[in-house]
Amino acid sequence: KNEVEQSPQNLTAQEGEFITINCSYSVGISALHWLQQHPGGGIVSLFMLSSGKKKHGRLIATINIQEKHSSLHITASHPRDSAVYICAVMNYGGSQGNLIFGKGTKLSVKP
Amino acid sequence: GAGVSQSPRYKVAKRGQDVALRCDPISGHVSLFWYQQALGQGPEFLTYFQNEAQLDKSGLPSDRFFAERPEGSVSTLKIQRTQQEDSAVYLCASSLDRVDEQYFGPGTRLTVT
Image 1 (cartoon, rainbow over the protein chains, first blue to last red):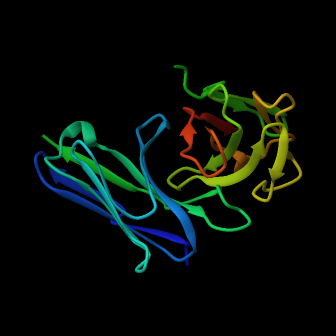
Image 2 (cartoon, rainbow over the protein chains, first blue to last red; image 1 turned 90 degrees about the horizontal axis):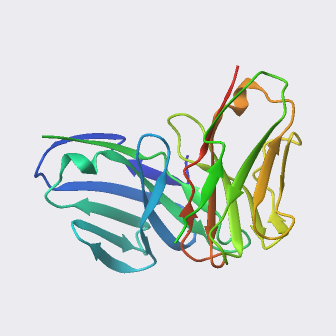
Image 3 (cartoon, rainbow over the protein chains, first blue to last red; image 1 turned 30 degrees about the vertical axis):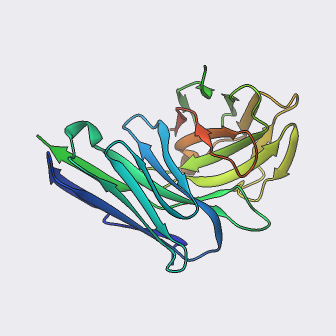
């Protein structure tokens, strides 16, 4: 079983829809990242959070430490949001700082 | 300011060749990470540097993989005698400190034929 599981693997939405991507993890963490990867490979960090909720524009990330679960929400989705969204947890303990990544959720937003 | 840069962006190597991949981290970032991302998969940790010290190389898949950061800035990931299974995107990330937010480079896509 992977230490970081994301769902869904693939997601197709119509422009304007509210989108939720989920991430569950099984290890102790000090922080969780949500990352965006566009075709061509470049990765951009969207959020780094260790508790509660963060918001940047149309993006909202939440984390529940007790349930070991995080969600990324996109409000009023737009075709430019089409990308792979990756959840990554920062290991706690000896390998602190090393990120353990989920496999990503491929989002396609249709106009 | 300048972000993390990597070169080359694309590399095609014949099986058995040696390759060297370069990472220029953000100036002043103490921590540097290398990750390997196979097609359709999430990245996986390879190795970690704090300044010039390689503190964790637990993710290197074989002794054909070698990384260095001799002056605590630029880092090079070297793969000797490349194999087809080494084909992947190699990502470099840097951060102010080990537990701070990591900033990623664009990656080097390595194809071994």
